[in-house]
Image (cartoon, rainbow, N blue to C red; front, top):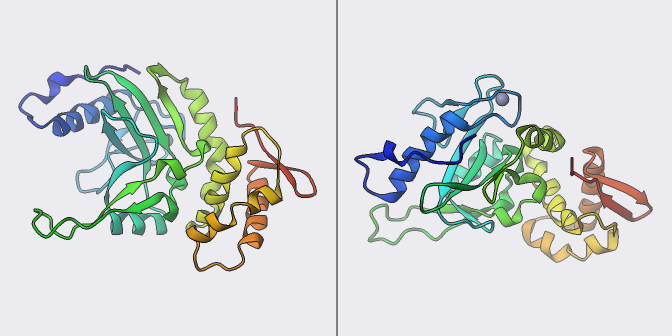
Length: 258
Ligand SMILES: [Zn+2]
């Protein structure tokens, strides 16, 4: 993997975002690999596939690449709100790659969010565009990266260092069983995972997770049995080998370090 974007490819393009789009897409075809299988390259998706930039020729996983010169692990701008919600609910979201590049076109960070880590909680509705805007009334969305557990933010490039592809693939496989949970119930699993992952390697107690009851109630306003749901999701996370039960009411995250 080379970390330099070839800005000469963008001759004739004027806006910086168009240039970035052009050079990052070309870079991806040369340098991206599939994290879900051992394919060492990705191919361009057909032009009429919205929101999907690349397809793995071997396992058919789809990828979308977003690039920005500004890095924020808090949120990134995405496309239309309704389209995104629909794709989350129907489980058709592609894997998301978020690239950060420097002023001299060097890639400094590249993050991969596996497709099955998107939930309704991670999509933020933006204000409709003003009536005077070219696309008046259009409602876009942000992806709230801060709501996604660290297990769902795999680093392919971290502060200018290339992470070993085998390690990235291993991390992908560790969380992949989450994809087996139906899109309708996966949101809860991911929301509980985000909270328990905050404890890192420190064992935690059920009462500590109950402490987030109001947080879960905000995310799931129609659910009145929050504590029951928390207990159930801890069992789901145990079955996924992401959480270990230590003793009654006491748990620890299974270390994801290789
Ligand atoms: Zn693949």
